[in-house]
Image (cartoon, rainbow, N blue to C red; front, side, top):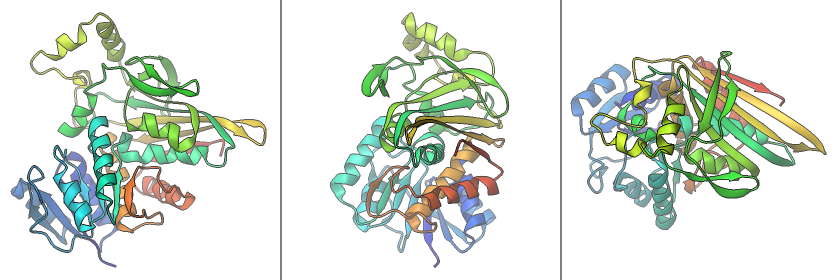
Length: 358
């Protein structure tokens, strides 16, 4: 069945890659590239074939008012007032969003719950559009209990990113709540230093960071302990950042022109991206340790775009793990068939996924 799919902000760094992947894996789909920059949208649409530009402004109510027969909408731009979300919910259009920070994601979930939509609304602003969260759920599958889930990320300086990705670094200097020792407790920013060996063989220190996965890794897997940690491929700017936070100088530094929490990463033309996921638990009275590795040599924006395609398949009914009506997160409705589809997409796109102990 042909689907008419709107990609809001589909000409951005991640959106354009997701559009190309959608055309590659679902050549029958009719694609609308939506946004305020009509020339950019039209250029991308022409390069894809079977696509059109759709002028729209998510900063104003009913941004899809002039668009008909939309079967699904994927949001690749920040929604500050949730106009696209609200209209999708009211019109019964399946919706997904990969660009929300913690507070905006909570607001979106609340809005979706209050609007009681008749279609799925997937909030997947997790690391790499929620793909690693699905892998973690696979590692925990079948265990009687889960003691620990950890996701460690190696970010390469020089990797490319758009403005929405860059803004994800905001708030890194703030403490947050995480699942530790069987309870929800406050943890410090960039705390709990550990060393992790990544799939390329690189060993780097990693530090706690806050994002949606911190909560859902614990809840979706029933884990007593869950964490997300970030490391850089060279130098140790994060350790320096920790010292500045401790001295109370970080917030002052961020007020200087041109400064941001990820300024040290020096975004560039692209680099690899690596992730390690570890799960410990019990099965049949035995202690079980499982591990997954993800290596994408095309970088974090490519890995995010593949995760976005998987999420889009789920809301549009294009894959083996479709979502039902209402608000959803990456791990909602987990099935082994759904995981296998994600793994197949990773493989097709040259992303190395390794599983140990399963």
